[in-house]
Image (cartoon, rainbow, N blue to C red):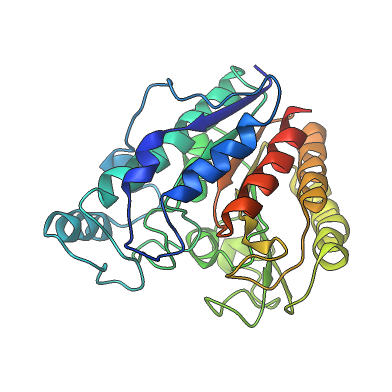
Length: 312
């Protein structure tokens, strides 16, 4: 299999409430983008598994994991750590989203697929070790990276994040860790207020966080330019063994939660650039994880362009 697209309908059972932009319909919109591709169909029949507490604890504190389970089971409306609305299925759905990403990593590293796209919700890149926020409960991409290291023995992993919002949770998890390179383009000033260019890592991780904040209205020249001019040279030294993408499509022109101007063709070119990095250093191994994207029609079209580039 060239491209595995993993899409578990359980994702639709997390519901943050009427009118919330991170809505169950996002799952269907993303899947429609893949269904338009000849010869590529989402894998709905792969074995569902929820990430275990031990697996979630690769990136999150056990106290936080217990807090999430306790508050969801108690019928809370909003997680006490911040801006994350929950329902009675939220813990299970988020654990299954993480489990889907771990399965995607297993498939790519084992050679069952050359690359993979995990269509999951809720998204994850704002989830810190001890806090859910910004529509995110568990950090799917970060957990995938840790799984690749702890189960498969990989040493160096790139997480590239083109969501319009800074992936503060991913940055926090790996800020002092030289084994995971976190690269982010994002709108600033904007939620969550992190991701300054001066934030480059700490301790052993100095130099393996690279933030490229841009003003509202930025588009291809700024964002693709940052990938070409800053990420590509950095990878010549870092040489990742796996490329992971935090694929947020709220950086698309017209998204209600962002003011970037990327087009579907831009997402395809960003995908091809990351695939080239993977070809150069990682044996072609790419795992992409859905993050934001809140205009449903736009999400369908952007996912179509992204998946088409992955499957080319």
